Picture (cartoon, rainbow, N blue to C red):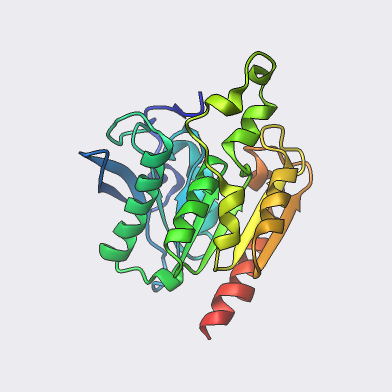
Length: 256
Protein backbone atom coordinates (compact mmCIF):
# COMPACT_ATOMS: atom_id res chain seq x y z
CA UNK A 1 0.00 0.00 0.00
CA UNK A 2 3.06 2.29 0.17
CA UNK A 3 3.53 2.17 -3.60
CA UNK A 4 0.78 3.26 -6.00
CA UNK A 5 2.37 3.19 -9.45
CA UNK A 6 0.42 3.93 -12.60
CA UNK A 7 1.16 3.41 -16.27
CA UNK A 8 2.47 6.45 -18.13
CA UNK A 9 -0.35 8.55 -19.61
CA UNK A 10 0.06 10.20 -23.04
CA UNK A 11 0.99 13.60 -21.61
CA UNK A 12 4.61 14.61 -22.26
CA UNK A 13 6.66 17.81 -21.79
CA UNK A 14 5.88 18.62 -25.44
CA UNK A 15 2.31 19.32 -24.35
CA UNK A 16 3.77 22.15 -22.27
CA UNK A 17 5.87 23.40 -25.17
CA UNK A 18 9.06 22.05 -23.60
CA UNK A 19 11.80 20.37 -25.59
CA UNK A 20 12.87 17.08 -24.06
CA UNK A 21 14.68 13.83 -24.76
CA UNK A 22 13.30 10.46 -23.78
CA UNK A 23 15.93 8.46 -21.90
CA UNK A 24 16.32 4.86 -20.81
CA UNK A 25 18.64 4.25 -17.88
CA UNK A 26 20.00 0.79 -17.08
CA UNK A 27 19.80 -0.39 -13.50
CA UNK A 28 21.09 -3.64 -12.07
CA UNK A 29 19.94 -4.79 -8.67
CA UNK A 30 18.45 -7.90 -7.09
CA UNK A 31 20.53 -9.94 -9.51
CA UNK A 32 18.50 -8.78 -12.50
CA UNK A 33 18.88 -6.04 -15.09
CA UNK A 34 16.16 -3.48 -15.67
CA UNK A 35 15.71 0.02 -16.99
CA UNK A 36 14.24 3.31 -15.90
CA UNK A 37 12.25 5.48 -18.27
CA UNK A 38 12.76 9.20 -17.92
CA UNK A 39 12.73 12.63 -19.50
CA UNK A 40 15.77 14.86 -19.89
CA UNK A 41 14.85 18.55 -20.17
CA UNK A 42 17.98 20.54 -21.01
CA UNK A 43 18.17 24.21 -20.06
CA UNK A 44 17.68 26.68 -22.89
CA UNK A 45 20.79 28.64 -21.93
CA UNK A 46 24.36 27.38 -21.55
CA UNK A 47 24.80 24.44 -19.16
CA UNK A 48 24.68 25.43 -15.50
CA UNK A 49 22.85 23.74 -12.66
CA UNK A 50 20.99 20.45 -13.09
CA UNK A 51 18.12 19.12 -10.97
CA UNK A 52 17.30 15.43 -10.51
CA UNK A 53 13.58 15.33 -9.64
CA UNK A 54 12.34 12.30 -7.68
CA UNK A 55 8.55 12.02 -7.45
CA UNK A 56 6.34 10.55 -4.75
CA UNK A 57 4.80 7.13 -4.20
CA UNK A 58 1.95 7.44 -6.70
CA UNK A 59 1.45 8.29 -10.36
CA UNK A 60 4.32 8.61 -12.82
CA UNK A 61 6.57 11.26 -14.31
CA UNK A 62 3.61 12.41 -16.39
CA UNK A 63 1.75 13.22 -13.16
CA UNK A 64 4.54 15.62 -12.22
CA UNK A 65 5.07 17.61 -15.41
CA UNK A 66 3.85 20.83 -13.79
CA UNK A 67 6.39 20.50 -10.97
CA UNK A 68 9.19 19.74 -13.40
CA UNK A 69 8.20 22.70 -15.56
CA UNK A 70 8.38 25.07 -12.58
CA UNK A 71 11.86 23.83 -11.77
CA UNK A 72 13.00 24.27 -15.35
CA UNK A 73 11.80 27.88 -15.28
CA UNK A 74 14.63 28.49 -12.83
CA UNK A 75 16.98 28.10 -15.80
CA UNK A 76 18.22 24.63 -14.86
CA UNK A 77 18.30 21.34 -16.72
CA UNK A 78 16.04 18.67 -15.23
CA UNK A 79 16.06 14.87 -15.26
CA UNK A 80 12.96 13.10 -13.98
CA UNK A 81 12.57 9.33 -13.92
CA UNK A 82 10.03 6.67 -13.11
CA UNK A 83 11.18 4.06 -10.66
CA UNK A 84 10.96 0.40 -11.58
CA UNK A 85 7.32 -0.62 -11.50
CA UNK A 86 6.17 2.90 -12.44
CA UNK A 87 5.20 4.34 -15.80
CA UNK A 88 7.11 2.73 -18.68
CA UNK A 89 10.03 1.60 -16.54
CA UNK A 90 10.63 -2.11 -16.22
CA UNK A 91 9.65 -4.16 -13.19
CA UNK A 92 9.73 -5.63 -10.65
CA UNK A 93 7.38 -4.03 -8.16
CA UNK A 94 9.10 -1.38 -6.00
CA UNK A 95 10.63 -1.87 -2.60
CA UNK A 96 12.94 0.27 -0.47
CA UNK A 97 16.22 -1.19 -1.71
CA UNK A 98 15.14 -1.03 -5.37
CA UNK A 99 14.08 2.59 -5.06
CA UNK A 100 17.44 3.55 -3.58
CA UNK A 101 19.16 1.73 -6.45
CA UNK A 102 16.93 3.49 -8.99
CA UNK A 103 17.81 6.93 -7.58
CA UNK A 104 21.50 6.06 -7.70
CA UNK A 105 21.17 4.83 -11.31
CA UNK A 106 19.62 8.19 -12.29
CA UNK A 107 22.48 10.01 -10.53
CA UNK A 108 25.09 7.89 -12.30
CA UNK A 109 23.40 8.53 -15.65
CA UNK A 110 23.75 12.28 -15.15
CA UNK A 111 27.39 12.02 -14.13
CA UNK A 112 28.49 9.51 -16.77
CA UNK A 113 26.21 10.10 -19.75
CA UNK A 114 25.37 13.80 -19.42
CA UNK A 115 28.76 14.83 -17.96
CA UNK A 116 27.07 16.71 -15.13
CA UNK A 117 29.48 17.91 -12.45
CA UNK A 118 28.04 16.65 -9.13
CA UNK A 119 28.98 20.04 -7.61
CA UNK A 120 26.41 21.52 -10.02
CA UNK A 121 23.69 18.94 -9.29
CA UNK A 122 20.71 19.45 -6.98
CA UNK A 123 18.47 16.54 -5.99
CA UNK A 124 14.83 17.47 -5.40
CA UNK A 125 12.55 14.89 -3.80
CA UNK A 126 8.84 15.10 -3.05
CA UNK A 127 7.27 12.91 -0.35
CA UNK A 128 8.66 9.39 -0.84
CA UNK A 129 11.07 10.94 -3.34
CA UNK A 130 12.40 13.07 -0.49
CA UNK A 131 13.43 9.93 1.39
CA UNK A 132 15.22 8.76 -1.77
CA UNK A 133 16.91 12.16 -2.13
CA UNK A 134 18.18 12.04 1.46
CA UNK A 135 19.52 8.52 1.03
CA UNK A 136 21.19 9.43 -2.26
CA UNK A 137 22.76 12.54 -0.74
CA UNK A 138 24.53 10.66 2.03
CA UNK A 139 26.11 8.40 -0.61
CA UNK A 140 26.90 11.20 -3.07
CA UNK A 141 28.41 13.85 -0.82
CA UNK A 142 29.60 16.05 -3.71
CA UNK A 143 26.06 17.18 -4.55
CA UNK A 144 25.50 20.92 -4.72
CA UNK A 145 22.36 20.71 -2.63
CA UNK A 146 19.21 18.83 -1.67
CA UNK A 147 15.59 20.03 -1.66
CA UNK A 148 13.10 17.94 0.30
CA UNK A 149 9.37 18.64 -0.04
CA UNK A 150 6.64 17.16 2.14
CA UNK A 151 8.72 14.26 3.40
CA UNK A 152 8.24 12.03 6.44
CA UNK A 153 10.71 11.22 9.21
CA UNK A 154 10.37 7.45 8.74
CA UNK A 155 7.85 4.97 7.40
CA UNK A 156 7.42 3.66 10.93
CA UNK A 157 6.32 7.10 12.09
CA UNK A 158 3.88 7.26 9.19
CA UNK A 159 2.54 3.78 10.00
CA UNK A 160 1.73 4.83 13.53
CA UNK A 161 -0.46 7.59 12.10
CA UNK A 162 -2.46 5.16 9.97
CA UNK A 163 -5.86 3.71 10.85
CA UNK A 164 -4.33 0.24 10.65
CA UNK A 165 -2.44 0.99 13.86
CA UNK A 166 -5.74 0.61 15.70
CA UNK A 167 -5.95 -3.05 14.64
CA UNK A 168 -2.39 -4.35 14.80
CA UNK A 169 1.15 -3.06 15.53
CA UNK A 170 2.03 -1.83 12.05
CA UNK A 171 5.55 -0.63 12.94
CA UNK A 172 6.64 -4.07 14.15
CA UNK A 173 5.78 -5.78 10.85
CA UNK A 174 7.19 -3.16 8.51
CA UNK A 175 9.82 -4.29 6.03
CA UNK A 176 10.15 -0.86 4.37
CA UNK A 177 11.64 1.63 6.84
CA UNK A 178 12.96 4.76 5.06
CA UNK A 179 14.67 6.02 8.21
CA UNK A 180 15.29 9.56 7.01
CA UNK A 181 15.47 11.12 10.47
CA UNK A 182 18.40 8.86 11.32
CA UNK A 183 20.15 9.75 8.05
CA UNK A 184 19.89 13.55 7.85
CA UNK A 185 22.58 14.21 10.51
CA UNK A 186 25.04 12.83 7.93
CA UNK A 187 24.13 15.34 5.20
CA UNK A 188 27.06 17.55 4.24
CA UNK A 189 25.56 19.81 1.57
CA UNK A 190 23.07 22.71 1.74
CA UNK A 191 19.58 21.37 2.37
CA UNK A 192 16.21 23.07 1.94
CA UNK A 193 13.11 21.60 3.57
CA UNK A 194 9.73 22.69 2.20
CA UNK A 195 6.48 21.63 3.82
CA UNK A 196 2.85 22.71 3.59
CA UNK A 197 1.28 23.73 6.88
CA UNK A 198 -2.02 22.21 5.68
CA UNK A 199 -0.43 18.90 4.66
CA UNK A 200 -2.99 16.26 5.65
CA UNK A 201 -0.83 13.33 4.52
CA UNK A 202 2.56 14.10 6.09
CA UNK A 203 2.38 16.59 8.98
CA UNK A 204 4.61 19.64 8.82
CA UNK A 205 6.06 18.62 12.20
CA UNK A 206 7.93 15.85 10.37
CA UNK A 207 9.56 18.34 8.01
CA UNK A 208 10.49 20.44 11.04
CA UNK A 209 12.00 17.41 12.78
CA UNK A 210 14.12 16.60 9.71
CA UNK A 211 15.28 20.22 9.59
CA UNK A 212 16.21 20.26 13.27
CA UNK A 213 18.29 17.07 12.89
CA UNK A 214 20.18 18.33 9.83
CA UNK A 215 23.52 20.14 10.18
CA UNK A 216 23.97 23.58 8.65
CA UNK A 217 23.79 24.97 6.05
CA UNK A 218 20.06 24.37 5.98
CA UNK A 219 16.79 26.19 5.48
CA UNK A 220 13.14 25.49 6.32
CA UNK A 221 10.20 26.99 4.43
CA UNK A 222 6.71 26.29 5.77
CA UNK A 223 4.03 27.19 3.23
CA UNK A 224 0.66 28.38 4.61
CA UNK A 225 -2.48 26.68 3.23
CA UNK A 226 -0.47 24.17 1.17
CA UNK A 227 -1.50 20.51 1.27
CA UNK A 228 0.62 17.52 0.26
CA UNK A 229 0.24 17.67 -3.52
CA UNK A 230 -0.56 21.31 -4.24
CA UNK A 231 2.34 23.12 -2.56
CA UNK A 232 3.94 24.49 -5.72
CA UNK A 233 0.65 25.81 -7.09
CA UNK A 234 -0.35 27.25 -3.69
CA UNK A 235 3.02 28.94 -3.25
CA UNK A 236 2.93 30.47 -6.74
CA UNK A 237 5.69 32.99 -7.36
CA UNK A 238 6.99 32.49 -3.82
CA UNK A 239 8.16 29.04 -4.90
CA UNK A 240 10.41 30.49 -7.57
CA UNK A 241 11.64 33.17 -5.17
CA UNK A 242 12.58 30.75 -2.38
CA UNK A 243 14.30 28.30 -4.72
CA UNK A 244 16.28 31.08 -6.40
CA UNK A 245 17.31 32.52 -3.03
CA UNK A 246 18.40 29.11 -1.75
CA UNK A 247 20.44 28.50 -4.90
CA UNK A 248 21.97 31.98 -4.78
CA UNK A 249 22.89 31.88 -1.08
CA UNK A 250 24.20 28.35 -0.78
CA UNK A 251 25.14 27.06 -4.21
CA UNK A 252 26.09 29.82 -6.62
CA UNK A 253 27.81 31.85 -3.91
CA UNK A 254 29.88 28.81 -2.92
CA UNK A 255 31.11 28.35 -6.50
CA UNK A 256 32.36 31.93 -6.89
